[in-house]
Amino acid sequence: MPVYEFRCEACGPFDAHHAMAQVPRSQDCPACGADARRVFSAVGLSRANSPRARAIDDAARTADAPDVVRSLPRQSGSPGTAPSVTRDPRHAKLPRP
Ligand SMILES: [Zn+2]
Image 1 (tube, protein in one colour):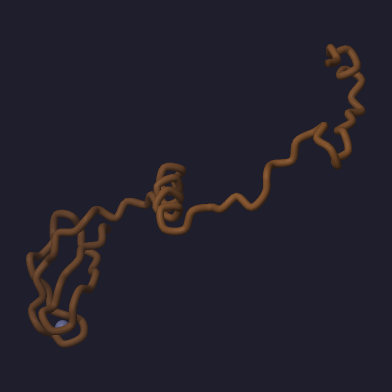
Image 2 (cartoon, helix red, strand yellow; image 1 turned 90 degrees about the vertical axis):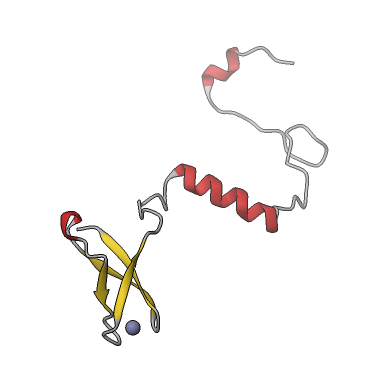
């Protein structure tokens, strides 16, 4: 059953499960028993872990706290670094600079 949101004037919002064909326009508040009206809110589809949701969250996060680059990426052949050596025999046939 879907979850519907209701709002009590005194206690605030709460959720309740109802069948789609039997959703009341108002319901008794579970805390104080007063009449609480149904509130129309965004559909609660589960997109929390989708790649699109993560990309949106990452973009929003970097707006406030951008990733800071503290050093240059390591490059092969630059001074002070050991050259990368491959042990794959197929790489011996590749052209050399
Ligand atoms: Zn209430």
